[in-house]
Amino acid sequence: MTVKFTKDHEWVKLDGEGIAVIGITEYAQHALGDLVYIELPKVGASYSKGAHFAVVESVKTAAEVYTPVTGEVVEVNEALETDFDLLKSETDGWIAKFSMTNADELKGLMDEAAYQDYLKTVE
Amino acid sequence: MDYALNYEEPLLWEHRAADGCGVDFEPLKNAPLKTGQPARQTIGWPKLKEPQIVKHFVRLSTKNFSIDHGFFPLGSCTMKHNPRLNEKIARLNGFANIHPMQPEETVQGALELMFDLQNWLGELTGLRGVCLTPSAGAHGELAGLMTIRRAHELNGQSHRKIILCPDSAHGTNPATAAMCGYELRVISTKETGCVTVENFKAALGDGKDVAGMMVTNPNTCGLFEAEIAECAKLLHEAGGYFYCDGANFNALVGKARPADFGVDVMHINLHKTFSTPHGGGGPGSGPICVADSLKDYLPVPCVVKTDQGYKLETIEDRPSSFGRLKGFQGQFGMFVRALTYMMSHGGDGLRQVAEDAVLSANYILSKLKGDFYAPFGDRTCMHECLLTDKIQKEQGVTTLDIAKTLIENGIHPMTVYFPLVVQGAMLIEPTETESKEAIDHFIFVMNHIAKDTSDGKANEIHQNPLSTPRRRLDEVRAARQPVLKATI
Image (cartoon, rainbow over all chains, first blue to last red; front, side, top):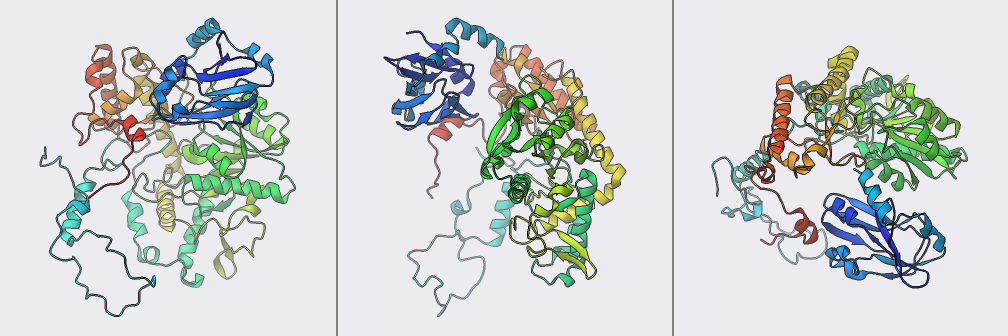
C-alpha cells in the first residue's frame, strides 16, 4: 500500500478495508526535536477531516496532529506513551488507526515524490 | 569548585541550623489550636538568624540577570529601564502607606491619581473608557474579551462564538479566547507576515458567528499592520469587535492612536510601555481601554469624578458591567509609577520614546541583516526586529546556540523561536533606553558569532555557555524524568 502525505506532515496508509493508519513524518519529528509528551486520542472518538486528534510535545514546542480523513478511532498505539522514539519506526511508529467514512478523502493527498518536492518549498 | 565570586548557594534548609531561632518568642502557652487538631509533626522550618538569611538572599540576587544588570533585548517584552524617579514618588507616604479599605474621603489624592492615569491612557489610545484593575497583560486580555462577551450577551448576540486571530499572535491571545469559551479561527499570515484584507476576509467569511478579532499591532514580526484599519471596518460591518493586544504599544505611543485604526478594546502593559518593573522585578499591570460603545460593559470599579469628589464605582452604579475581576483596585503602586513616567516625559517625550525605540531596532536590523537572514529585512521594522538562523544553520549553528553564546558574553538572549510562523526566529527589542554603546556591543557580539560560524567553529559554539554557574541543561531529560521534590 502506498503512503500518502499531508501538508501538515502527517503520513497515512491503508491497513485493510477502510482502515487508515496515521503517523507523523520524519521531517515533522526532526523539526520538533526530542519529544517529551504525547497525548493520544481515545478509541471510539470520531473526528472530521482536518480536526486535531493528538498532541505531540517537545522541549521546543507542542504541535497538534491532524487527521486527513473523517472517521472513528479504532486503535491507538499506546506503546508511544512510554517510548517516544518508537515514532521513528516505519512499522510501529503509527499514532492511531481510523475507520474511514469516505475513502475518497485520500485522493487529495500527496504521494511520496510530491511530498519530497513540497518539503523543498518549506523552510 | 567554589570560587570567591562564582559560588554555589545552598537552599535555606541545607544551611547548618543556628543555635535557636532568629526571633526570641516565648513558647506558646494555652493558645487554642486554630485547626482544632494537634500538629502531627513539625514542618521543619529552617532555623537561621537574620544575618544568615540576609546573606543567603543577597548571594542569590547576585546570580540574577536583570534589566539593571545588562542588555536585555527580549522581543515583544519591552524590557526598558525603570526610572528611579518612579520609585521616589511611589514611596511618598500618601501613596505607599494607604489601605484599599480606607474610606474614600481619606484617599482622594490616590483616587485622583488613578483618574488622571485613566485619562492619560484614554488620550494616548483614543479609547475613552478605561478600567485599571487587570493585574497583568493576559489578565487585561481576559478583561477585554469578557467586556466584548458581555456586550454581545446584552445585545442579543450570544450566538457569536468565533474569535479571529493571526498565527503570529502571542500565545495568550488564543488562550484567552478559549478561557472565555470562544472558538478560534486562525488568520493565516505565513506568507505576508501581516494580516491583509485578503487573508482577513478568508477568515471572516460572512462574519455572522464572529464575536471579535484579536491582533497585536505592531505584530510579533516587528511589522506595522498596514491594512488593519480596512480589516477593522469589515469586522465592524459584520458585527464583531476588534481587540488589540497592547504588548507592542511602545512603538506607537504618541504617534498613532489605536482607536484611529479601528480598535475597540486594548490592554496596556504598564510594566512594558510605561516603565514599571517586570520580569521578576515587580507585579504586572494591564489596564484596559475601550471605545465608547463598550464603556458600559467594563469591569468595576473605574474611578469616576462626582460633585462630592472622586469615587470608585460599584456594580449598582453600572449594572451592565460584567462585574469585578479581582479584589480591590489593581496594582496601585504601578499606577503611581506609570503616571510619574508619563508626566515626567510629557506628550512630546513619550512620542520621542516611540521614535527612539523604532530607531534602535532599525539600527540593529541594518547592521545585522548582512550576517543573519532577515525575513522582512526589506521593510522598516517597528520597535523590534526579526532575524533567523537560516544562514548559520547550514554550518550546524542554530538559534539556540546563538542565544547560549550571548549568555556567555553577558547579554540576555533575545526572544527565540517566536513568532512561531518564522523558523528559528530571533526577535530583538533593544528599547529606547539602551545606549548606543550597549547596542553596538550587542551588534559586535552577534557579528562575531556569525564570523565564528562561517569560520567553522560550530563545535566551540555548541559548548556555550562556559562560565555560568550551570552549563547547558539536559532539557529533554528534565522534561521526561522531572524531579519535582528535593529530599533534604
